[in-house]
Image (tube, rainbow, N blue to C red; front, side):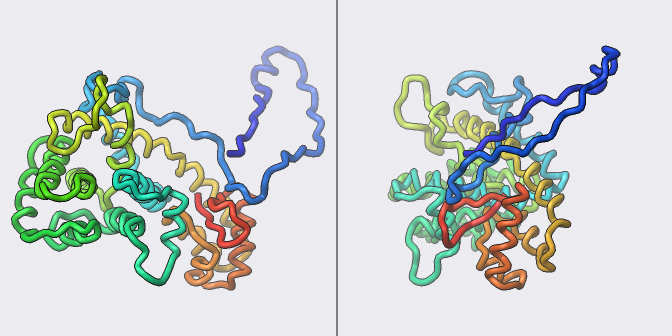
Length: 350
């Protein structure tokens, strides 16, 4: 990652108070730091999450009040989302990508975020379980939240989980989703989903249970689109009990605290994603772009985790060569990053 070295600027007010003139600064040619042009472009490490210290999860199972930390984190995240941030779409799909990567780890599927990014642009034959996981979480983030039989059946089918009676399961989930505070209701709903598949390998119903957890949070907080949150942090080692052992799964005695701790960490991480700053940089750079379809490219970058020049050329519309030049310009302006590190089939995003 390329990190910017920031030097403190002189304080003109303090200098005036001393009664001494500020010597003029001589401008010299900026020195360039050699970099590998094929490395993905980086940004400085984002600032800590804007969650007060007293409201953060303690980081260790059994310490503090995870439900309180979860409520505080979700309240702050909810307030942020209600300002309609321009990069809300990019945040949702990026969290879907992270959730898919965590789900693949649960299933011991050999993939990571970079490989999953590529899968979104793949065409042809069925792409296998990794692509199904990405589709599973992107569908959650891409439609309004609901717990209806068809939506639950589609989610289960993507995970190869058979549902004989989706209506009965839906009625049970709706009852649990309305009881108590949103986090506790989501934890109970997830436990109900998990218990519905006693004969399936544990990882598959667990992923569906985490999907239901995020769905209930979105319904209870009246979000227009769900945020895939809990799966991004459920594997955090700090959520395990001090004595070790396997992590709590939905329905276990330690599950409510583990779920609350995971959602507290996930909410703080989503607030610290730094996408708002990057979105503002992109929007400020838009008037400097000469291409007429540039506004469409800006909208794509604000709505997606990453965009390929070919995809941009189709949707703008513009030629592939013009799209590549436009993305190179955005990278030069510090308004976009290149994720792939390849000389061809490059991917760009905030």
